[in-house]
Length: 294
Image 1 (cartoon, one colour):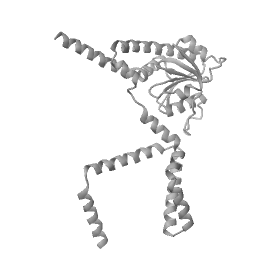
Image 2: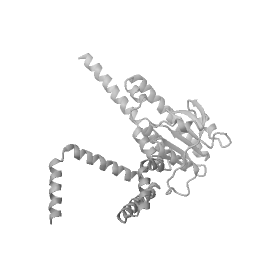
Image 3: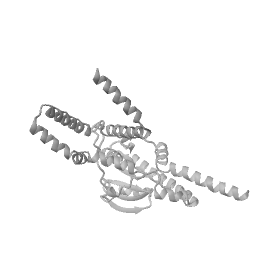
Image 4: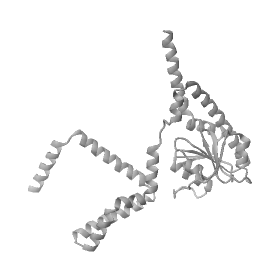
């Protein structure tokens, strides 16, 4: 009875000293734990977490029964546990840091907001280039020529680009067709598209680690999924077997695109936000002119 009374007294004492910043602190820790669980869920890392929990339970049992050698060994392990976790969970930690580092307001986009004419002209250029890419993709689709085109967005893909051959060219249907021609030296790799210009070709992409991927998918589709898991890029895949067009984005693959759906999706992914910013900047410009007239 005394133990219960003491527990309630301690609980009331904690409640009396509880402040708003304590609630924020608890909420922040809960959020971190939630995202950590979400990060490892349905990945190979969850098995490692289970193994660590087994070691913690084993350490508790060893402490209760005073198993000196086992307790000493596990305590030494837990001293370096943080370093071990960083090594073991390196791919997952890297993925989280990359996601945190992504920004929707890069220098290039911010600059365009303040230069109305340049922004408008650039969007027209991007729409033209998207139409060129779509025309080339549809030709590859009709000829059943395999292709892998990575449209860079906010995450810079310099490390992937270094694995290929630098081109730095304005896109054209003939150039894209020549790169993916099945006897061309660069056709097996991926093309990196930066700012809707051809940046590099023949690049090597990381394969997906997802064990639940359809077994019928080939290397191109697995590479597209792997790249989309490690960046926010939009990757277009043309199947060599069927000619079907797919897009990999954020670890998911959507398939069977037509010309109309493909061009709409690329507009949405690559320039929709910039168009919205242009409308806002043009509105601000028009507002300034109206004020001057008044």
